[in-house]
Length: 294
Image (cartoon, helix red, strand yellow):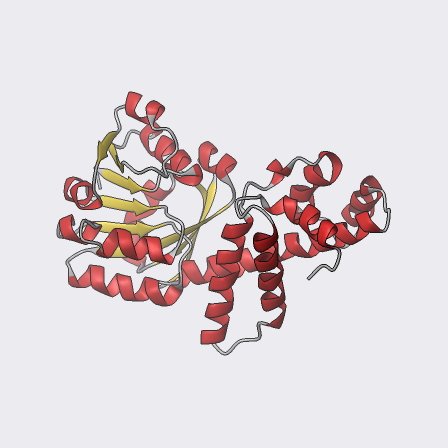
């Protein structure tokens, strides 16, 4: 696994790329309009390719860090996709958030083409990505996980082997439902508090000292105090996508999902009523303005 390729140099992918280079791995990336600026990476010796097939033909490992299932499928299966250029024995590591059923299907396709596939879904934020401190939830066979762990450790602090292929993406959806659902719940309460005239400092203090304390509250704190949404740099449109994936997974497994569906509908309405790229803390303002909270 000497030569590494990366597709998706966005907010998270740029941090991953920087840390792979920092650990001395030769890195190539796909040129794409959605990338963050590549100047610093190119200055560090990173190569670029115009198509995913050309990239795959030049590397031993391809890391995917794209938006979701449609993008993963397009990158792998498209006319100039990874599978068109992938060498026998190559490893595909999907760090995206994706539907587990698709992940399992793609893993079979990659295996039939002579490659190996592993899902390694990420949690945490672009800040931790830049610091090389992501959490990874990995699905794949134990031998492949052992082989890839040193590479994953270049950009991750906590690495959990969740089970076979698809288990990483299943655990990611569970995590994001709880994480984003908690933020949405507190955002709705904060919107109610605002309309009721409750001082945001009092709101934060009481919740923080009681059952509302924790990561979700702290991510909302800058917005509640100063209208600064940077405490959680995660777009509401992405949150809606993740909740849609979660409810689809729960439905396929005949699991209870009424609370999750309520969160999904709240996000769906917020995306329709505001800029889809607005960050999750801005949900407070959207709900406070709307006033009905649904």
